[in-house]
Amino acid sequence: MDIGQRLRTIREERGLSQRELASLAGLTNGTISLIEKNKTSPSVASLKSLLDAIPISMAEFFSTLEDQTNPKVFYRESEFIKISPSSEGQVSLRQLGNAEQHSLQVLHETYPPGADTGPELIVHEGEEAGVVISGEIEVTVDGTSEVLKTGDGYLFDSRLPHRFRNLGDTVCVVVSACTPPSF
Image (cartoon, rainbow, N blue to C red; front, side, top):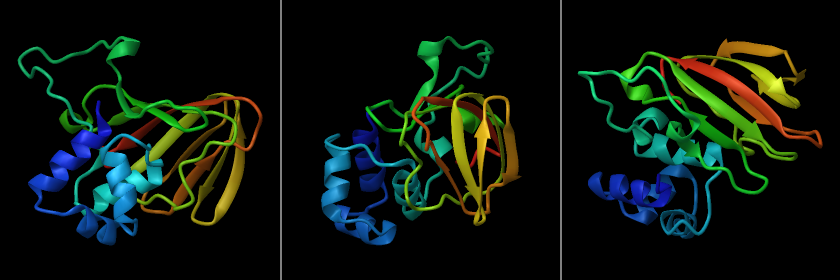
């Protein structure tokens, strides 16, 4: 998915200038311009701030059409929706299916060493749960932080401010779910 073009299309559909969206999201209009030209990738938290300012959910932003007469059941790795495409040192989030069509959002998350969801804490409707498949991840929820290791998990109310950071020196992989799909 071309995140920059998708953001620009939605921004223009809503009648917002880059400057107006930047002001609403607490970013600079230069940052919006760079994102729309795909010259920079927003952090997960920055993208969430932008989408909240529009307003549109992450699930809606990344939705694709699924054939409702023959709902898709099985997905190959190449069919996951790249919410946050992998780039050096940044979080990669891949979504299973179209979360707009379901009551559950499932993500495959990869955190390279030093990667995090951004300095801004994330808040959204729903409940969130996940299991660390490999590596270690620091999870902060409502001011409390814990380092989770392979096999550990989490479950919390997503309305509580939260953040994920890989403080280790190996890649961390997490499989998570959110219901309803509001991220």
